[in-house]
Image 1: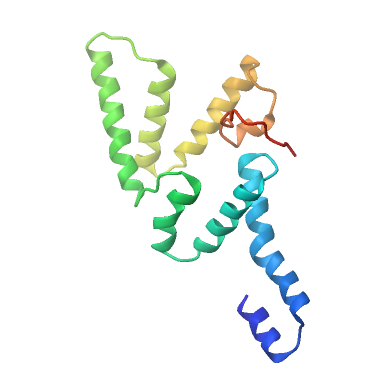
Image 2: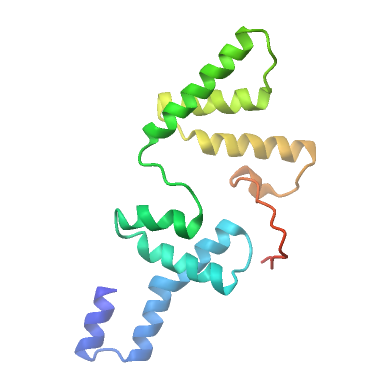
Length: 163
């Protein structure tokens, strides 16, 4: 972007060429990333959110403040924050089993996988997404192979345009 600005100031490129460069550097990647994440064509509001989030991602602290506002995802400061909750849930399940009560096996396996991921530095959330995808594919709940890499898409009440 800095190179584009400099070339524009020096007269090496005109405004149209600069706008094309900004399109490929700043807008196109943001919109494509949003399309891949949501698995649908964006409307104007979601495209603007994608672009704003993409631009703000370059600035530490600013992105940490504005990202939850734009995406709705909660930001965690460090993996240690998630580790504490994961180990606490695992301890709760172990206590529940020890007292003779039943525990949902899927929740137990997910909690154990997350705790092991934090303990050994493994990508636990991706393992859980892949395990859920295998279960959903084998049970016939879905036929999308993308479920092996991506979590289940949240269902919206509004009609979405698919690509």
